[in-house]
Image (cartoon, rainbow, N blue to C red; front, side, top):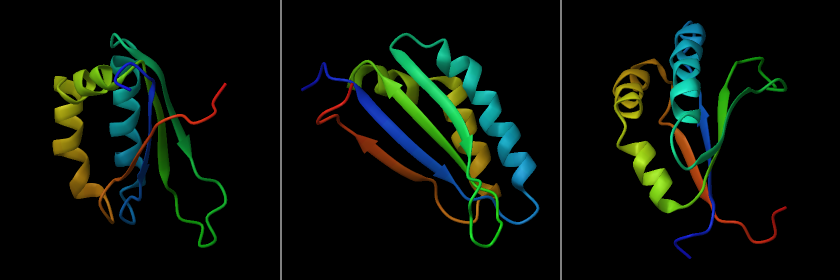
Length: 104
């Protein structure tokens, strides 16, 4: 349904030596995104158990509905981050969009 919450899980694998740059770019998204109408959660995490010790970052996002996610993707801060971060990543951003089945 269009009015159900939308969750996004995004993963970022920085190139070697680019970890801090990626982290700075991602941290710059937190404040502006949390201020967007329709954003309920925008939390940034770092993986701590990578077998090879590499650093990776992960965003857990929750939007009121699909329209709120669409709004997010049209903001200047989103467009700027997408244009900037890719060159610092080892692989494309891993994005999974989720719809709740049984969520509290």
